[in-house]
Image (cartoon, rainbow, N blue to C red; front, side):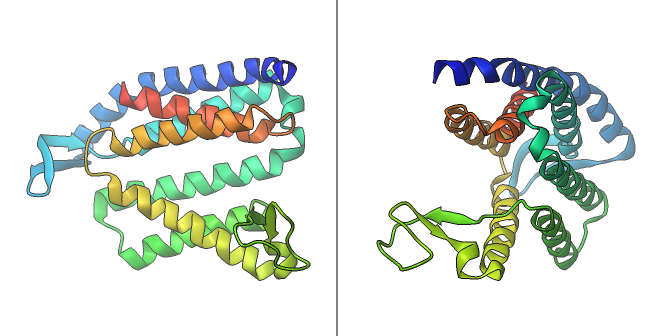
Length: 226
């Protein structure tokens, strides 16, 4: 256990700190850019803030996240080599989501188009092998496709794993969108979630890609709160 944690320490440090510092550096410039192009939300009504607040902060989060992935990959490449395709799929999906969010903040993309983009992003993950193949078995013995611990979705039918993954990605995306009504709420929850999952991933020697992603996301969120 101690050896596993030590092996991850350079990766976590590089990803978390680089994401944090990058977002702290990006946000003031992005704020000035947002005010210049009018990418703001006016306070009042259901919005509790006062005045015009820039609403394209997701670009800074994505920028810090990408910086952290690049530096983390360079620091400990051996820990993530076998997952490079999956990591690239996460990056492409994230870029697509951010681009659609940016356009929506400026011109209000119709809900149907946003939903379609979210399913496309989920599809990018799925076709590159990032999908939910099993879930915790809460149901006891279910036959051939389960054991005492897990229910294997791909064993039942590959389409089940695909549908569950797509619904999960789109559902989580919209859940975060719905809670984004107070300053720091969604980014704070992202930090807490990422650090909690990171604490779990650090206990296993083969979770390098997950450790990199979670450390990068937590660092980006904390930089944005600053």
